[in-house]
Length: 241
Image (tube, rainbow, N blue to C red; front, side, top):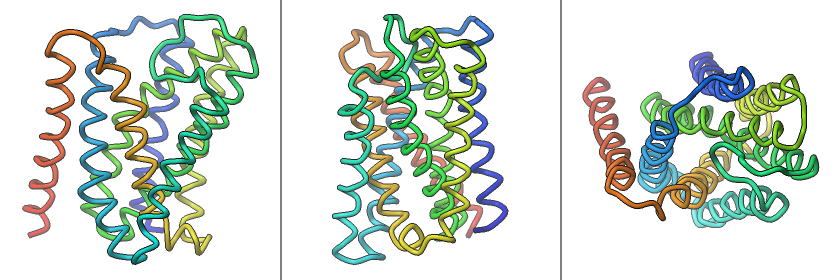
């Protein structure tokens, strides 16, 4: 793994801690801005997953690529919405028990572990793909940190533990990046696994957070996320050319 990949993984991971710190410090944040960020992230993540990661995954491991993509998708559903059915992005406003908060943390740590794998695997292919994956992951890291720390506080945990939960997500991302070169299966199938996880987070986690809400602001933000992906891809291609 290149030092570039590790640096970008650490930057993305730090957003988990920033999101958790915003909740723990009881800072005021704009719900409107958070919703817009979620919608924008969803459009960008779905675009990267389908137009870069999935295509690269199918081209590299051959016919097994589709199976690994599905495996990644199912793993996130299993950990976040089967073992931890209460989890959602955004502030937790209902009281929950400790089991719910810990199961959500375990599920999210698997997801953030693959975030690190995704960034490292992307940079293994090209710096352009690595940057696109980094930005897709960075966009949803802040709401992710906010969600897990809010969930811990709702379960009656201390602010220190709530902040620690955000730090655990960040740590899992860095470990994922570090292990990508060390574990042969991650090196071979990391892109495919990342495609499934990224698609799930964008389409099945983030989109439902705003698709039932009225108005054009959030749908427009989703399409803007797709457009931003194309813009960044064009800029990166121009610079590499």
